Length: 406
Image 1 (spheres, rainbow, N blue to C red):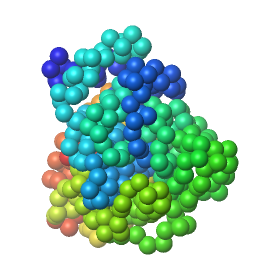
Image 2: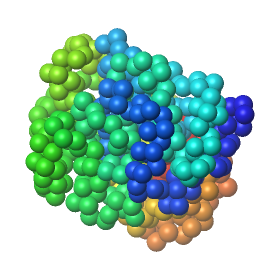
Image 3: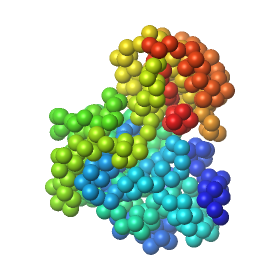
C-alpha cells in the first residue's frame, strides 16, 4: 500500500477515538503490552519524559522538546490528536515521521494488528516508539492520550513523570470527581521516579501525595517552587503554568546529570517553541484587523482562562465561531461564554461533531445568540464579513474546529 492507502486503512480499519469517540477507547493495557513484546520492547530502549494532565499537555510537551533542541539534542516528540496531518503526532526535531516508515511499519505488522484487534492509538504508540529507537533519539517527550493509568503510552519508565493539572474532561472514562480523575492521571507515576505537578487543588494534592508515598517517588509542585518564568512565543494566559511546569522538570533533569541544559537553552527554547516544534492552535493569531484568535481549549478548565483573556482585549464587537464534539457537556461549558457576542455555530467535519443546530438550541438557553452555518469555514468567512477592523473574532470549542481554520 502507498501512504494514502496505508493511512486510509489505519483510519478506517482501526478504532480511532479522534473520529469515533467512546467506542474506540480501550481501558486496558493488554494489547499495548502484546504489541510491545511483538516489537521487541522498543519502550525499554528509550529515555523519556512522560506528560499527563487535563490541559496543557501539548504545550508542555512542545516547550520541553524545544528546550532540549536548543541544547543540541535529538528529540522525539509524540503528541495527539493531530490537527492537519497524521504524521504531526510523531516528530524528531520538528521533522515529521516519514511516509515510508509509516507504510513499512504497517505492512510489516498489519496481520498482527488485525489478529489482535488493535486500536488506532495503540498502533500509533508502537509506531512512535519503534521510530524513535531506529532514529536513535537522545530524549523523547511522550504525551499521554487520555488519563494515564491505562493509556497506551504508560508502558515506559521515564526520567520524570509530569502531571500538568486536573480538570473535568472525558468524565465518562476517567470518573466525575477531581479525585477520580487525579487517580487516573497519577497512574503514570512509577516507582522511584520523580514527579512534577503543575497545578493542584486540595483534593488532587492528596491523591498525588498518596500515590508518591506508595511508589517512593519525590514530588515537586511547580506552582509553589517556580516564582519567575521566561518569555515565550506561546501567548495564552494559561501558558504561565505550563512554563513553570517545564522549568521545574528541567531542574530535575539537570540534577540527574544525563543532559546538559543551560538557562540560555531554556530561554531560547521558550522563545523559539513554535519555530522548533511547529506547535499550532494555542492562542494563535490568524489575522490583524479584525484580530482573529483560535485556541484549542475545549473544557471548562481551559475555556475559563481563554474567555477571560478575551475580555481583557480591546475591541468594539466580539464574534465567536463555535463548534464542539457530541460528547461535550454543554451545561458545563456554555455558561462560561459571554452573552454580549455574536455567535457563529458550526459542526467540526468529523463524525463526532455535534450538529450545529443542537448547539445553537442549547446556547439559546444560556442567552447566547447567533446563526447556524453549514461548515466551520463558512462560519469563519461570515464572521470576517460581519466584522469591522476594531472587532475581535475567536474560533474555538474544539480542537477539530481549530484544525479547519489553520
